[in-house]
Amino acid sequence: MKRQINWAGLIPIQIGRVSYFEGHPGAGKTALMKALSKMCDLLFQHYLLDQESPEDIGGLKAIKTIEIDAKTVEVMASIYDERFVRAINQRCLLLFDELSNAPPQNQAAILEIVNKPIPGTWMAACGNPVESAANGAELTPPLANRLVIVPWEMDSHGILMAFKSHRQGEERIPFDEHTTGDIPIVPKDWSLCQPLWSNRIGRFLSKNMELLQAFPGELAEQGRPWPSPRSWENAAICLAGADSVNANKETRFTMLNGCVGKTSAEMFVRFSNEEDLPIAEDILAQALTFKLPRQPDMVMAVLRIVFNFLMQRRSEDDGPERFEQAMDLCGTIYKQRPEIGMMFRGHVLHTKPASHVAAARNSGEFAEMDLLTKKREFAK
Image (cartoon, rainbow, N blue to C red; front, side):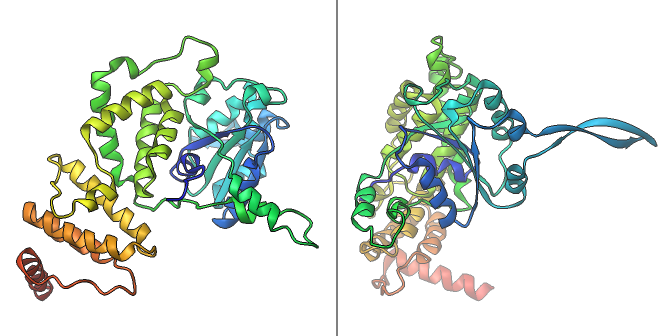
């Protein structure tokens, strides 16, 4: 299976969160953001936070007049920078670069933007660890608690391929062509699994109330991920996004760590494993014996996980095998909950690889499902 390089940061920026990619200088963070914006048809808007003023980010104040009860009143308004105006009105990737060199007043200005996600615009931040930044400054606690802070993963293989593929006459080594990797594209219905994770986090916190709000006592830790109601909500959102693209365990843990910190993330993972929410491969491997969860929200979450996995694998070599396993799973589910089995079968049929001829299933529960399908079509 391919490594999901930087998925832990690429997923949140597509679902209204802001990822902070933290890594040493020269590793290609900004270059990937530019390449990503081009690949996804997003206008790239770039803030260099060590060179900006707070007004560049949050807008200049100006006086305008408004009418109140037939009276003209002067009020303050903001005139925004072109980059922000474009981000509001066009699909953009808004990058806050050199975040670890940003003074507190610039971080405060960013906070206003982070608080109000812009529909259709992806927002990310990049920076160096404080010890390797030119003018390193810790993140302020309010900003750190709103970000998904993830370590930058350098695509070593892609960089080597770029060096080896440099041809005579090319001005630059073609890093962009080789280091964008496998980019996860989050589907529009990603939020269907969010209630599952919100509920699970609620059950976890009810047993670990000290982690609902745990502001660090150490000054250095206040600019890192730490648990609060806000960051736990971010965690639920990120985990739902991870489900929608079938992210692996490593990606999920990195996102969770980036929201609430390592200790809280490890405790939640242990709790979550005890609740045994299966992954798609495990479900399909036991297609003939799989038992539906008792909780309705977990039933829908499990089926959504399998469906997303099938959609991703339909064009891969194992797509036909996965489809056939899923059809067997439909029969198993039908015997437990006929209405759920019928619904899931309809979704699974849409995941059949184009050139694949499905195996015949004409007896038992499959004959019943075929009959019910014909009756429903006739009733229409």
